[in-house]
Length: 368
Ligand SMILES: *Cc1c(COP(=O)(O)O)cnc(C)c1O
View 1 (cartoon, rainbow, N blue to C red):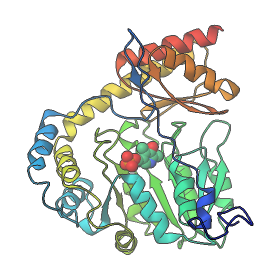
View 2: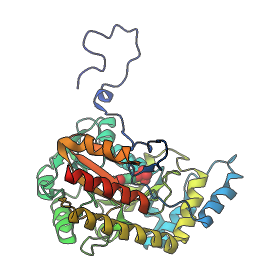
View 3: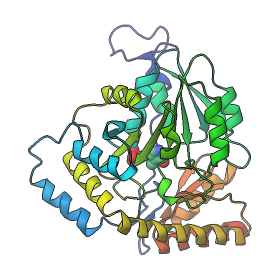
View 4: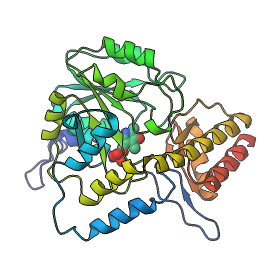
């Protein structure tokens, strides 16, 4: 890696930073809705849950505000117990973090540094390359197949002596595609036992395809498999930042060492506990979003689009060079989508009205 200062420019008068940072891209968050005169604006760019918090969750958070002069429980003990019971695993297997992105960072920091490699599909979750580069390790990005799914054979072949970690995003963000049980098990059987495999299941609750395995079942027999889940999507707590890993004790212990004390705040802890308690009610909302996803996919296919099935709370349109044009058209109509320049747009399943506006724009675009 080159110097952070261009060669010859470091005269000692400007601060010196780690050379590894030169390659780290800035995180591009989904844009906020564009506000225009006379039309409602919707944000379909960050895979958020469009429903406001349940009254029961709202109440525990409001009550906990009265105690924010005190530090939260650094061990997240009550939340870990709640999750352990919910998933039928020991509490020592639960590692809670400030959003699952932070837990993913803890996983990278616990396994990889200078000279080590981390393998993942591309395009996939935007945070992966950043976290790997920040750790000083090398991202090994394996292109998706033509059907927008993981190329697990190529990923297995990309594992070398230097590989420490593999991310598998199921369903994949931003394409929504899934990996079925037999395929995933065959892949896990090919990965050396000293390489950690992270099954990132941020959208698990939106899966209706029964051929997709539950990572929690796969991890039980495999000490190198770690499952990542979040409260940000199906549970609608994106603004509070809470996610967790399920891992065997040896991995979980190492993972805890890489987390900051008090990383998960008091409001996030109580909201997550209350959300597990209110799961049935929350999953009814997920069901409604899944119905909307079916409507959106079927309408797009009816309009003549080539779309692959999505099992997440978003759909993916491979627009290539016309990505920016489509995103701008949607934005002008009141819905902000997530463009990946030169590749395609990811559109979150949101409020019914918002989905309808998006579909109208998709139809218009098709006719152009
Ligand atoms: C949204 C998302 C996450 C996590 O989000 P947090 O809000 O940090 O919990 C993790 N992985 C993928 C693939 C995601 O899309």
